[in-house]
Length: 339
Image 1 (tube, helix red, strand yellow):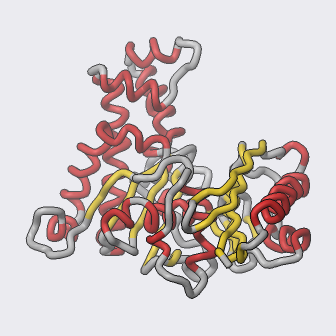
Image 2 (cartoon, rainbow, N blue to C red; image 1 turned 90 degrees about the vertical axis):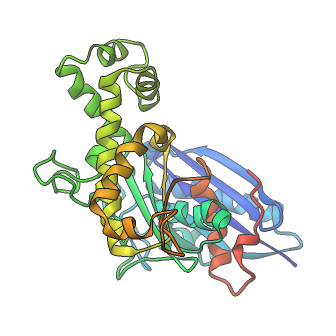
């Protein structure tokens, strides 16, 4: 029988559920709004209804490898219990895995959405292109997600909470972060942070950014990047600072992990050409490991820092391939990507 899986990407705005085959990629995707106002049980009911529909439609003649579900963290594993996820208000302490399994009557595997994006990038994206099965990924969105893949498997840590590099301290006296610390990487290199930095630049008389703020759409990372690309020095300065923060964070990760690949994804990574000059300057300055192993150097196996290859579907793809990575099957990197 041909194996297939079900993958779920649970987001604060949208809920995506897909059936997936290694040979054909995504067979069918269901997109639903995440009805947070209706309560967490209503959201889970919507999810399970869609899973059951896909099982009925695509299960004939196929072997179900498993159901993988990606959710915003913090997520306690293996219990599948959420701890104050910022994008899912009211879900603190929710035993998500138990609730889903109670409805479906079968086992599911939960994983943080950042870990699944990293898994997909390793097995279907940059890692596959380079023949690498270990990497560290930062996703620059509303916050900063982080996933670590070692030997084709997610590194969870003791309680499933490994991969919180977005909350490493970059500047100790920096702005307060929602995690309770100050000056976290997330406060300088997320899309939210870039918006804040832009508004701070307006206070310091950045006229080009001020004009952008007066437009109907207001300040967005995309429009700010266009302004920077046009030569506006204040806008470029915002991305220089975000890139510098990323470089400081990545330097610490390179020195600590010594992995072959570090990938930067998420919406803000679309401004890679604006971020990368100050990013690489800081990594080169602060990481002797990188200086010794950078591409083109003497080391046979170098250290690469690159933008992600997969786009917005990385979390969903990661949820779909997760059951295959947990089974004794042929290497997942032979999987087709059909999005």
